[in-house]
Length: 331
Image (cartoon, rainbow, N blue to C red):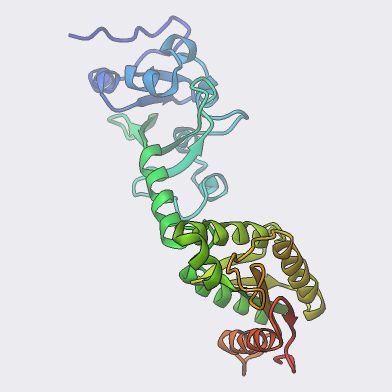
């Protein structure tokens, strides 16, 4: 039979029902128990393995928070013991909060895990323990390491929203973001600008350098466009050799400046098409159509895209490697 953790003299004695507490100590699930003074009564072997903290370092103390966080912060068991369940939403981000019945709490969050030296995503459940008279005598918290599941979920979400070749946002992410930014612009009565960027002479470059060369060309252009973005801008691969840039709270003048920086940066990449035709196009460049809207109830994001597309068509028609502004702004 596995040996039990001995409670040091400084720690309070176990209440009635000690057999149940001893079972907790032997659980394969990481578990700790706090007394009415929020001192650790049980810190089982599984909890030692998860946190890297030996039971002897925390039994009889209120230092259990140090196993999970850099700065003092109550665990779910502390909230249960101190009747502070109302603070749950301040400590754990939505939607990971799952209040349960009978005073029990459930939540998920990233923890620093100072002793382990790596952040872990933990699911925690804390429940009150009452004696036969109904008095609260302890709180038990169990933990589950969900780091691998959380990282896998993040990877899947990235696959769903990222273009596999360039690493930029994909068309689905662009559509979702554009509608979200349109709604925000409508609420805040701010301008929303859009750039449609099309690669000039890409077919010639692809024919001369093969598909791998064409892929590398698109990746270089994607990096060039992304390097001109602010933190809240979005650049996406719209399809094929076309990119789209969402510029929240950006005027048409500001959008034109960004567009020119993109055009100039791509031109400086100097990627010859290698067609061998002196009369043909020399290098890969980009043509850009810009559009800006002051969102209104009687307009839509689709109209903004249509205006930017029309401007892009004009840029292509006028000789490529240039930017084109809309004939009229969408209001």
